[in-house]
Image 1 (cartoon, rainbow, N blue to C red):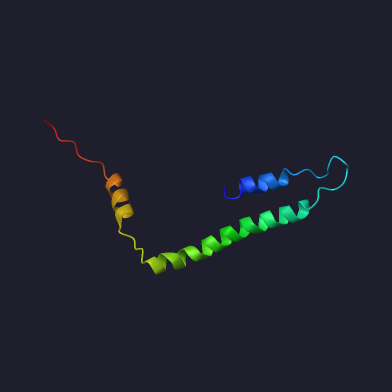
Image 2 (image 1 turned 45 degrees about the vertical axis):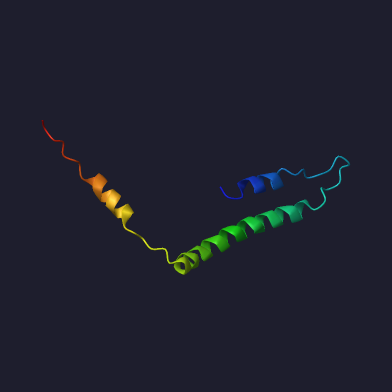
Length: 79
């Protein structure tokens, strides 16, 4: 979903002006929009593991615990 609105806005630019000339800079706008979207995805995707290591974030196991608890049905007490 990231960048969809930016790309849609760039693609919504008309091909020609009211005078019939080509819209000035439309190709450059499309190219730059695509590059910015691609670079933000690639840079963030590649830098996230390094950032997690630098911050020292570790898995506390809470995800495994909650999945294990939900896998076993709980006993109901009678009485």
